[in-house]
Image (cartoon, rainbow, N blue to C red):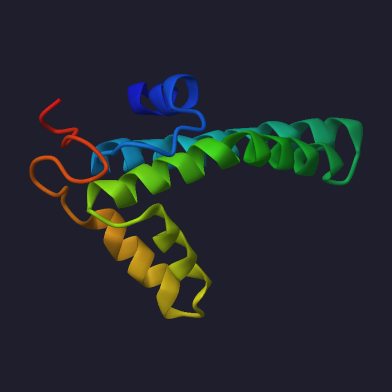
Length: 124
């Protein structure tokens, strides 16, 4: 939860620096938990009001828009941590293999020491 709060409150749109694997994956985990909880809550409201999925859809879109910048920012910082430019995010646009490559990047260990994006967050 600490990593999620850190990404939202301190690094909401911070595309500079580095993010550890732990920060990235905890953010992704809590983002998915938030989306699932909002989906359930919206589904209950839709069921009670009989609104055929409108409330849950609106809530999910609003949550997703609110989390878009911090999700992109932590992804950029994670790429920086392995020594890649944040622009590597666009590899995901390559059909089939691009998203797999990006996923593999997210599992790679940090570059030891300081790189051009800043000090190793493990040592800070």
